[in-house]
Length: 284
Ligand SMILES: C[S@@+](CC[C@H](N)C(=O)[O-])C[C@H]1O[C@@H](n2cnc3c(N)ncnc32)[C@H](O)[C@@H]1O
Image (cartoon, rainbow, N blue to C red; front, side, top):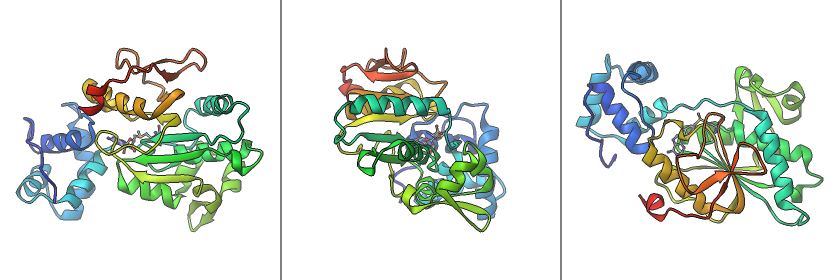
């Protein structure tokens, strides 16, 4: 059972879905982007034999159904990603990890890919570290989470189309880390087992246990409102260890958004915790 389908904002059927998306994920859809709702939900309408968004909204309000709501939220999420997206940033993360480990080669570095979509980001990190490590004991622990159950299932399966595999992967890496199954490419077990995939809603779910050395939360907070963004930054700060690093997407920043992070003086474009934990925002 869906606990509640949120009260729609003005604007017809589309607003029911915008409200549902926001209440579940923190993501806001601007008015004027309703075309996106229509395009994204076309397959859901077709599957359910409905003609319009208004019909789907009415059905959902009359009989809230978690499976339908999950399918709608999934369809509305922007899950754009690719292997080695902003590759220079991942190289910088690898450099930072080597420095964080310092001379203590026994310390297990912990990395969290928060909002990992279908797994290309954490699998890219796993490839990068495996290619650089002298032995398996030096490999970081990589946890990868996303609100979308379907995306997490895809990451765990490690199965990608020809189009997806070609986006960001060199032929050498394709051959080294993947094998073909029919028309698809499937990550070898030795790669997938290096990433722990879990479903997790950054806005509401309990966070992973323990502290992380690096958190990547790239291209996730873009569509959050300011209060929700501050809330998530405060939560991330709680599980990043002092001296650890936060990695955001190319168009994102902490400046003017939160007091919990500041730009790293050492790693350009990355952020470090200030130590000011905003308990109110974290709990909000
Ligand atoms: C645009 S993708 C970015 C993927 C990857 N980080 C990258 O930069 O390539 C954004 C991801 O954030 C996830 N997401 C959105 N809201 C979320 C939330 N509240 N909790 C967890 N994940 C969320 C979406 O499901 C989507 O997979």
